[in-house]
Picture 1: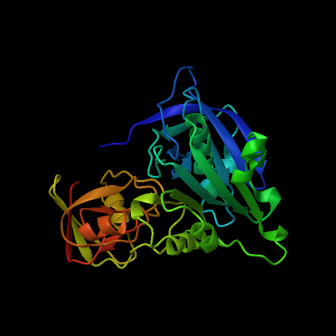
Picture 2: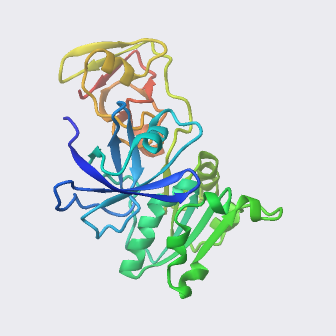
Length: 320
């Protein structure tokens, strides 16, 4: 089924930090946008053909706008660079509706939020929600420099009695200290929920530090791939609904092969992070390369991210 999209107007672009801009998006004819929850993201369908996912940073009670932040990554494959260089106030952008793969557990007595760089974006929305419902939270926010840290002004605007809950850390201001993630996690009460979003090395350290904690209290959001996509090829994909068989040749992903064959498939990040391309597996064994499915879900082999994962079996039967 094709993804539902809508057109929105770029109302405002703001400078948030070095290489980071915020973009306020509204319904161009007025009215409300689809509701969302803290931790959600939307997909931007860019005029250059790319689709990129960005977290919503504003308060989920707001229905009149979406606010995203885009970091102009030096290693951008064209997404963030295009947004920074080409998108202007007054432009019309096509977006998907909000989805949430990084949901906030509002019932938790205490939430600990750990952000690295642009990873502050979904956590800022969570802070707004936790404040609104009166839940306890604590933030640890690391960045290369103070100038590179987004939304410091908004964090500073919280009431003074909340300041002890916010710990901001900059690489160039540590005087030899390190951002001690294991120590941070080790001091978190057993009943707390932990959330982490940031660069891959931080997430790997976070997952190692939380390995002994209940998995339902540990939450991670990846913005980029942890490993290379499966492009070994040499297998067939059978499409159960359309009764077609597509050969996946070496050097191509399943998604590449499907698109070249004229098959319509949902996708966005192309890195196995956002979950847009998740497809049900009917037969065969996937070679999972994504960061979206849990280890248990990968072991069950009931679905696969076709943008980055391959096959261990000679044939993979998909619900397409």
